[in-house]
Amino acid sequence: MSLSLQQPASQPRQQAIPASYGFHPIPTSVIHTVAHEFGHVLGMYHEHQRDDRDHYVRYQCEKLEGYDQAKKDVEAKGQHTIEEVCASVSLGYEYNFPSAPQFSTQRYFDDLGGIYVTKGGEYDWHSIMHYTSDAFHNDRLSRDPPNVPLFRWVNGDPDFQPPPVDHTPTADEAKLIGWNEQETTDDLYSHIQTLYPW
Ligand SMILES: [Zn+2]
Image (cartoon, rainbow, N blue to C red):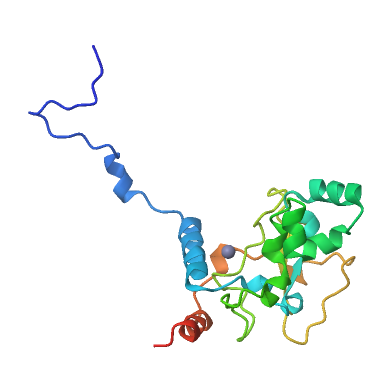
């Protein structure tokens, strides 16, 4: 029997997409990701890149994918430290370490002018524009705060002084940030209204 792409005229055209497709539930993570990207389209940037974020979260660059190779390259070149690269948008890209710029607070000082950031209201761990703890994680099986790129301080607030970086957080001090706890907030609407007054 030969295969033909054409259907005989007397038969209805076959569905290229399985009939069950229309009823297949879309994973929640996909909906969050799409909403997050729409946030960028509307002009919002990442909540965790606010320049006051250290009062609320800890960024652990060494837990990012690509860190080990970037560190080797930085040391081989001898022009910068890995700490500088972890904190810098331009150096992150220069050393082929593109996950680091996604956490840099330098975004807030971008000269592009058109980029509006969500800073203004209270820090919002639940923002759709906030990364989860496992974003760009180099080891997704290690799901506890000392081992993820980003976690939240339980007592985070504008006056909270984070412990020194060599302090390993306890379960009472630190929590993971996940999609499940994230909801759209009034704060998010107010940012959009700032950009597009109505
Ligand atoms: Zn994003």
